[in-house]
Image (cartoon, rainbow, N blue to C red; front, side, top):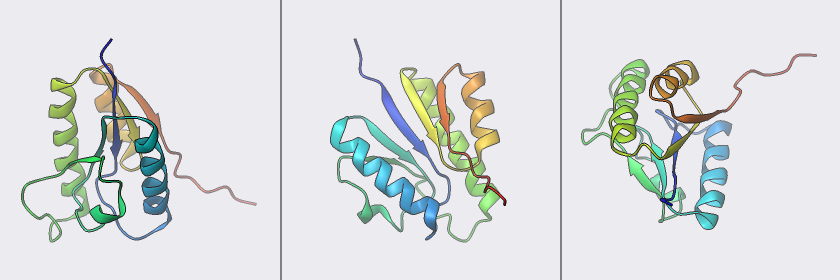
Length: 120
């Protein structure tokens, strides 16, 4: 049986708490499993990730492009990666709605991080 590929989808990596969770979770998972990928347009924090993790990033620097266009570009990267690698699971950290629609369209399992904060 072919091993599954795990893709962490986070189109824009800034310097906040979600990014810290992404780094902690992906580094932990990469110690236990192979075939870990991160789909992002940000290359700034690449050194904080385990060297076993592979990155799906645009060839051009998109730091001066709007965040929405970065999300769209990363969705295209994810789409073409999944077409080549049907045996994948996506762990979505950002752009949840877009990623869920894409994964459901391609019949790929997806895990979504809830980004709502509790009140009260």
